[in-house]
Image 1 (cartoon, rainbow, N blue to C red):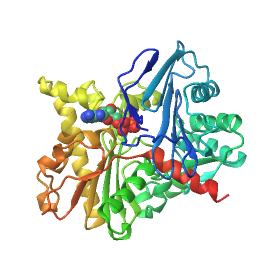
Image 2 (cartoon, rainbow, N blue to C red):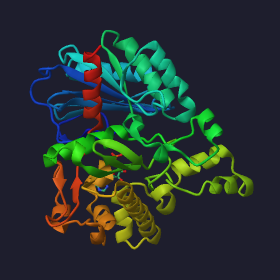
Image 3 (cartoon, helix red, strand yellow):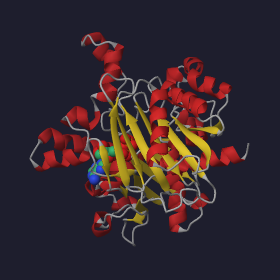
Image 4 (cartoon, rainbow, N blue to C red):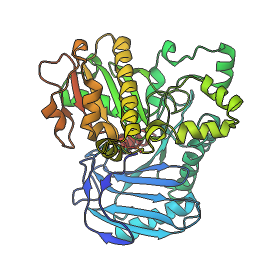
Length: 431
Ligand code: ADP
């Protein structure tokens, strides 16, 4: 999830900066007309949280606890009403992390009791074939989320632990699991099936699931609202370009193709992940380079992508290196853009007609050079970017294609927390 607020605070203490990067700042009232929803995203060593007004859409407060269970002090940052409070203290486990966060709500505000929390929405990475919709968490649901661990060994156990401790600490509020894979339940079989032995695939759940679904769904829905056109009428390509990156093809609001697969490793080149690669590279490295499977796993997930090529995984630094004449940095950007263009072309063929292409997440929202490079020379497809519109920097969704272009190209800030909050509230209200 993108941290919801930006500021320059470091070290302990309180400062009063804070511009919402999502453009959602809380009004004076902590208690919205429809209460609030606490959104939790539990990673293996971090816990991100955001308190959201699900109807108005404002982020009331947010925070992150980092270095959970690691040696040395953990790092906590809590932001409320434009002020950030940071703390350094050991955080033994997720239980301690959530207690710290709840403590900061009590101490710095807003009081969770006053905020009238109607639901806790949990981001869960893998819903497998079992979960195609957000669900109210029960003991059985929690067990099933844990059962999906083989498909998402880094994510689902941490997600489940976060749910478990949150249910213990907030037992009176409904907890809802919102799955990153759910939006892709509509993929046609031709798109979700890998061409391997069918029995093996079925026995081991080997298929394309897709990830970042909450973002792809939110952005494609937002596009329709911003353009004032029925979602059912639109063929869209959504490019979610953050640290992780994925593309989707969405026809009439339903996902018909996406770039991530069994895991979030497939598809686009990412900050540290390879994306598409010949599977035989794995055999080659195991057989001939003496690497273990775990080492190859680590290589492809953590030492690949633009970092693997250039040593740098942040696009701001990458551009600086390129400006200094660094050739690997330039190559990394070229490889990244080349892969994206291949996907845009492929998804145009999947859809037959493309009405809207939207860029979202950290790179997609901020990097006008990447956007321009992806769309360059594609006028023959009906795709073009207006340089002036592309260069503008606002946090609102906006069109960056020229008026004459057949396809509308947009920048649409994603808001996974708000999407999770709204889905969680809907499920909680329907209990
Ligand atoms: P995630 O949620 O996947 O962790 P984000 O969507 O927050 O990631 O995207 C983070 C990435 O966005 C950073 O690693 C950086 O490469 C990129 N990014 C953030 N701000 C900018 C910017 N102003 N210009 C270019 N890239 C940016």
